[in-house]
Length: 308
Ligand SMILES: [Zn+2]
Image (cartoon, rainbow, N blue to C red; front, side):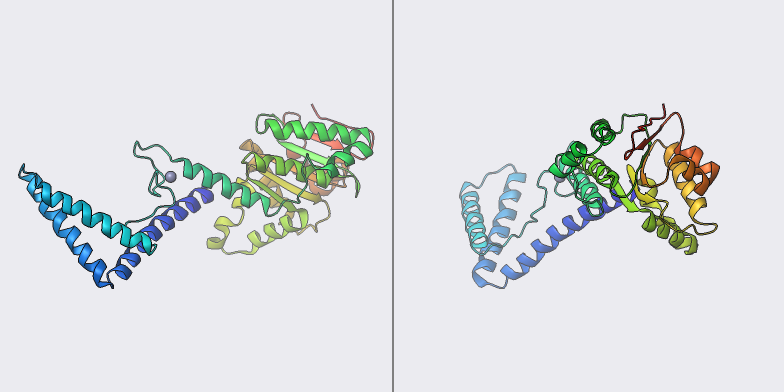
């Protein structure tokens, strides 16, 4: 989430700076007009003299009335032209600082956070939802196994991140509906404000290669998303090429880091568990198939298996 935090800080800073700049620009614009300039210097002069009088314990009622009049005229002049000489903040509550007067975090920061998480997740997620007829029909028209997986994943998404299951593998042939199910799960999570990274095994693999071939300075943030997203979804594992010293090694690092931090990974694949062991080896297999946190489902056959 580190990236997201600094992104939010950056947005708030820009909003605040823009509010001040706009006010300065409007003020410079307004001062070009003689009638405004006269009103403005009148307001300034009266502000000084009345506050000086007050500091001396006196009240110049006549002057104060004139100040009120002049201010009202100046405000009217500005509003007729749509100009603002005091900053107009995106969030008037915290004046775009992100903190309320009592020091607590402003609601606008929370909203921004959710918006960013969602937009980041949405970009890459196929648009299937549990509420779609497509998924519902798919669940009904195909095997009972799929309907069961459907119900389980809907519950999983609703309770996330409470479930102890962190490694979810949907195994099935092309057209079994596993990608739709995974996407529906991802969208349900994104709707609840979690960050979801949905990627294909091909793109995932390319990212690992990019990391491997980058220099040290560039390496720093390449894997951030893969490591930090609340849910990492990899579609079609097993269709990617295995790059020597890259694919298996970094895949292991990512799975190992995520699982050790209690973060979830969801995978669709044509491979069965034996083929996953053969292709990726003992270390990755032992991370993906762990009796404490893994769930493996075949969804195009009758053998729904859940590793307990
Ligand atoms: Zn605010």
